[in-house]
Image (cartoon, rainbow, N blue to C red; front, side, top):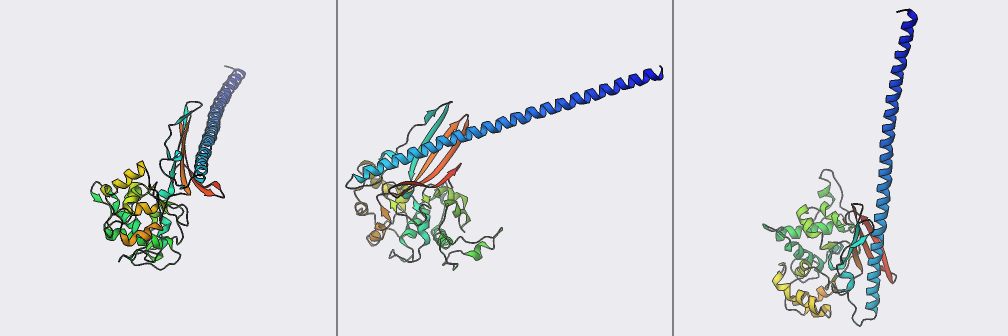
Length: 342
């Protein structure tokens, strides 16, 4: 083969290699662009679905506020206004179908039927008992003693008392530990170290930072405690769940009431309801020496509610938790959390 032929053959080979490289590079770029395009549209689609779902959730929030406003109007016309589980706002409703095969559901809960953890800040005994507990602390002590698992009580009396004092230290402004309490010295020895909050709780999940609290105790408490409003609240006798009613002081010092003992109260509440706090406290299961103090922590009306909304769009589910409070003659959102109420 002549030199010219070899040169031409080499050039054709080089051109072929270059062409193959260009083709391979172009194919790689196209594949990359396709993936980027798919990712872009997927992200845009996810963003649109999220915004659409959130719009439905906010709509459910406004519907919940409208129900509470209607109830407030009816209460204004009543001689004995009260918030009960028999009212429209407290009724469960079936999921509402929405366009595209999704669904929207929501429900309202009375946070003032729960025990407000921020009530535990007190230090002065008001019960007349030898325990040196305020009436709120005495009730919470009994609430702790209602907690059980398959093996029995989650806490012994001394453990429950220690936890009550530790929570009080977590809340109060000073850094002086109470008897059986816990302040900075306790928490700074942990890894990682931290300080006591020394202010009202902003979330029930703060309990997990308090000495003596365990995941099992917290899980058992989370549906019957609240931190709203942050300056404390009374317990609504018409909406309090059975564990709260069991925690109201009975004839024994720290023993919670049994389910059998509160059964007449539950039956009366479900049928006729209580005419007043005083009527409830006339029941013989309540101790005469704490009735006056109990009356100061019980009520018939509520100002703080939890709205739980859930929406499903394009097989994607979102939840919204909103704390709704009475304010200025109406209602306002105090807190709003997506995903999970803490």
